[in-house]
Image 1: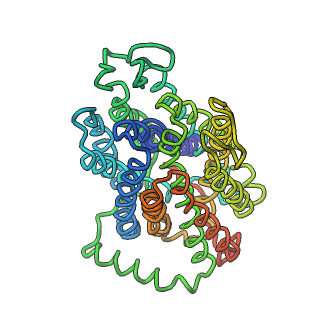
Image 2: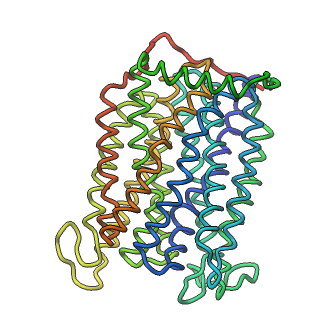
Image 3: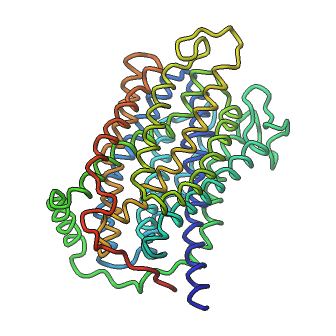
Length: 455
């Protein structure tokens, strides 16, 4: 009975990382802070280009360091120590976004701070994801992963609702969604309510990571052996050289590299796109976010059960097809037309179409991310799981600069936000093509991750 309680506590502690970290994606990357940057910069295309270059640069740093850090963690066994370290990056970067004030806005400083927080979030995620196979047998991994994503979406939703109700003010009225002055006497003229999204994201993480650090236990940490960095570099180089010998794992890394980049591009530019093309305010974009997050939470939970029943590959395939259709559809929505059909001035149809697409992005995106880390557990060597998730992060970030940079370049060249997001279509298509070479159970059907490691 004690072991069962310890296992449940450990699983719930692991869930709390998703709950604590999700607001960085929800509030900062997509629905509150990114549209606010568009307001400060005035031009939607200019903001979309700058955001693309900044997020792309952070992705490049993550791509270079992720597999090495994962290999070092496998050597030392101290994943919790790495999570604590990168949590500091997360909190410092998020809290610093308070400085993005009207009249004294420094774009370079803002992007650097955002990148620091993003790097912290992504690196901490590598180590928490690598704990997934320790939480239960393979038959339960899909459900556990899906429940974690659903719980994380619920945390992002609650944080977004709090921002909209009590803090994020309209630039025109200075009041929140329900007509209140920003809480704590924050000055709407200085946009302090909206800028509070940075400190709130940092505080949220600090508070809700407590269950994770209290309930999650790693295998007894070892002192890093002498020459750990050199050994990690050697191990990563050897693993990369041997990837062709594990064709399913190799193909999955390539497939996920493209489709996750496309999905991250949708998340990173959804708010800026809707703000610039349809003229949505921060509050409008926040409501769009609520729709997407509710769908994401519900379908991530349901997708986890489908994953356990049918396996992650058909789930991933379905989600990529849905997101490809959405990527095509977004290009054909504007204030004057929807899918090429003209709409009268002031029509709500473009807004409704964008809300529907947001719901589809949330639903398919939540399921896709949950099933993707479940698939990774099936493909990876259980004895080198953290390194494998480091390679998974490398696969996700080695081209992570492609989506934002290609969107930035396409937007700059065309001066059109609609044409600017079209590279997402090709990324999803490439991911779907490479997925055909992925075996549902990886290169070795006999490979079974360890079951539960209790505290």
